[in-house]
Image (cartoon, rainbow, N blue to C red):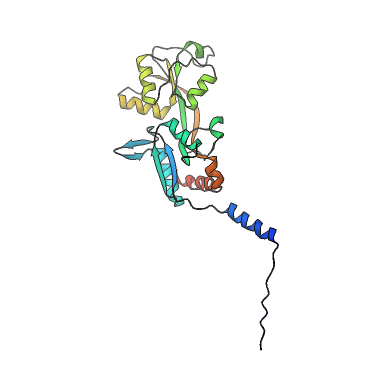
Length: 239
């Protein structure tokens, strides 16, 4: 009778448990579907005949296709988009700049867009906006409840209106309800074009450049620790 001896290796239970935990943490479980929220904000995010588009949407779509990640993008009010992500009802929203308040509940991707911010000044106003006193003399506004609007308030500017979108902001400047509007150049000039206002009608003063990102909820990132890194890697191929 032949006896076959099978050698086995015994591992401590703690080591086995550690390996299991490491594998669980290090491997991203594939999502059935990624749910992202955004707003109608031409030319970055648009809706035409029920189809969404715009440069920011197209870059997100390109990135997710390269990742092989099924997704759904829902259009809604900007404040609602942020609230749903904060409440973990959506995985993320775009495209928005970084802020301390957003960082409390979300983690930002690499920039989708780096865009120029500009002051648009009424032709009846000749103030030097670099003069510190100008912030008190002129009437300012930006899209309500955005980082731009909140920053103006925090810096002591005379903010007098609460426009809900770029078209409303343009209308207020056109009608003389405000003297200076702060908005992304492409967004404001798109609204001007739609209204038939010449591109040189308002005096434009450069304010700076701001990055706009996808903001993923911290809860989503906790459950999918490798996702943002993979997203950023795929995003680089979509410019």
